[in-house]
Every structure is written in C-alpha cells, then in structure tokens.
Amino acid sequence: MISNLPGSSRKINSVISWALAAYLFVNCIRLIFDGSFTWTIYGFLILSLVFLPPLYLKDSTALVPFEVLAFLAVPFTLKGLELGFAVSNTLNYLTAAGVALLLVSELDTFTSFNTTPRFSVLLVSITSLGVAGLWAVLRWISDIYFSTGFLVSESALMWEFTSSLAAGVIAGTVFTLYLSRRDEEVEPLDED
Image (cartoon, rainbow, N blue to C red; front, side, top):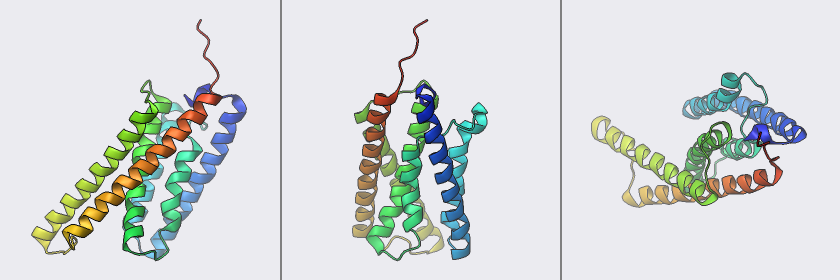
C-alpha cells in the first residue's frame, strides 16, 4: 500500500501526482476550447476517479502512484496533434487502458486486493479489449439505428482491436514495472 512507503517517497509521490492531476485538469480545459467534448468529459471522469481515494480517506497524500497519472497524461498531451488514424485510435485505447490501470492501481493500493505482475498485465489487457469491444458494439448500434457510418470496415475494426490490445499490454507492463519498484521501497509492516 502507498501508506507503507517511506515518508519521503509518499510525499514525493503526492506532490508529483497532484502536479499531474493539475496538468490533466488544464488539458481538459484546453479540450473544451478545442471543441473535443468527448475527451473533455472523459478527462473529468478520470480526474474524479483520481480524487476518489483522497476524498474517501480524507488524506491529501492518498493518491495513486504518479506513474499511473503520467501514463494517463500521455494521450491527453498528444490528442491535439494530427497523428493519423492508427495513432489516434491507439491514443483512444491507451486512455482506456490507462483507466483500467488506474482502477487496478487504486484497488491494489487502497484495498486488500493485491495483484501479481502477470495477472495485472492480463487484467489491464483484457479490460482494454473489453472497452474496445463495447465501443465497437455501441458504434454498430448507432450505425444501424441512426445511420451514422462510424464503422468504416471490418479491417479498420480489427486494427482498432489490435491497437487496444497493444495499449493494454503497454499499460499492464507499466503497472508491472510500478509494482516491482514499489515492492523495493515498501517498508515491512510490524507484526504486532
């Protein structure tokens, strides 16, 4: 748990996490002015997940590890750039994988739920694929009932699933690296 980290590490994590949360907030405001309302809502939902532990525990240092927020900041930083279809879809699913990573990290950090490194990679990867599947079904339903034309081709859809899986594996690997770093820093608990 983050509360088992040495005091200085916990304070450093808290300061960096708050700075990254502020950065995400500023990006959400920027996205409003860019007209990207979907990403704005998505960003504010992510921030609400980030702030659940400090609000619930009434402890301003009870934030997820800064590595998770840094991972989530990458897609929001790159979103304003025109990077092409494949990269844009990868950013979408990288964000979905980041949310899965955030949830697993919060569960691992603030509850009795603990994951092994391999399981965390699998869980984040499968969750990312699940989000991609749900998004594809919602777009398909929209195409049928509203003639939106969101699904261009089966090939493009398969590339989206591939992007989603890659993003999930990357997010799971980031979480595994975090777990190994955290395990090196954690002070042993007293067995009183």
